[in-house]
Image (cartoon, rainbow, N blue to C red):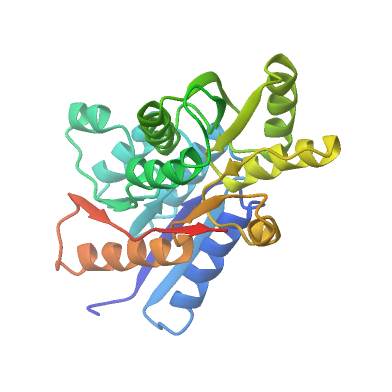
Length: 282
C-alpha cells in the first residue's frame, strides 16, 4: 500500500444477527493489516435514518479516507454520500442500493457491491410456490419500504407468486423487525384465516411470523432471507422451507477491498459488482 488508510464501515441495526456477522467479518479482515484503520459504526435499529445520516457526517468530519455504506434509506442517504464525494471521500455502496436517479442528478458515481436481491428472492420464492396449489392464498411480509433491497425482494416474490397462479391477499411492511412482523402477521392471519403460506423478506421477520404460528400450534410454510443463525432450528425441522445466504461478512470485506482499490488507483468508484448468494433449503 502507498500509505495507511482509515476506512469507515457504516451499517444498520447492530443488534441484528446479520450485521453482527458483517461487523465481525470486517474486523477479522482488518485486524492483521497494519495499513488499515477500520472504524465500524451502525445504528441500534433498522429504521434510524437520521442517526445513520449523523454517523455519515461524523465520519466525514473525521476525514476518513473512504466509507463503505449499507444505507437504511436508499434516498435519504444520498445527500451525505454526495457531501463525502465533494470532500474527496469515496463511498462504496454495499448490500442496499442507493437511489440511482438521485445520484445521477447530483453528478456522483458510486460503486455498488452486493447481491441480486430480485433473483435471489425469486429463487427462494419458487421453492415455496412449489408446495402450493393454484389460487392458494399467500402473504408477503415486506422489509422497510424505502430500502431498495426490500423493493427488489418483494418483486422477486411477486414473480414467483404470479407464475404459480397464487392469490396474494396481503403484502405489508414490518421494517425488518421481529416484533413488528409478529404484530403484522397476527392481524393479517386473523383477517385471512385461509392463508396457506408466507414469504418473508428477511429471517428476523420470519422469526416473528413463526413465533405467532408456534403460539397457535399451527404452522404454514414460510421462507425467509439472510440465513441468520437463529433460523437453523426452523430449517432442520422444516418449519422454515428455505432462506437465502448473502454472506454479509464477505460482502463487507469485498466493499473494503474495493475501497482500497479505489484509494490506490486500481479501480474507479463506479459500476455494479455482484456478490454471491446461496439458497438454503430444509
